[in-house]
Length: 77
Image (tube, rainbow, N blue to C red; front, side):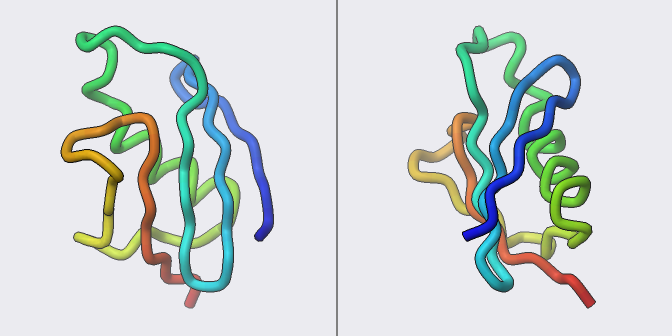
């Protein structure tokens, strides 16, 4: 998998891309109040690091509502 790092909104992310899928991991601790923008920032991290857009509705997390990691299907066409 390709590995990319990016900082958005002061939050560090690592993006792993393999084919038409991407996984985003948020680094560091965020309090509950600071987590609201994270899902949108994760999608932006995928776009900025891979040049691909996240397919709508494809977000999957290990735990419901988790902002620490997410997996996406991506569209690079």
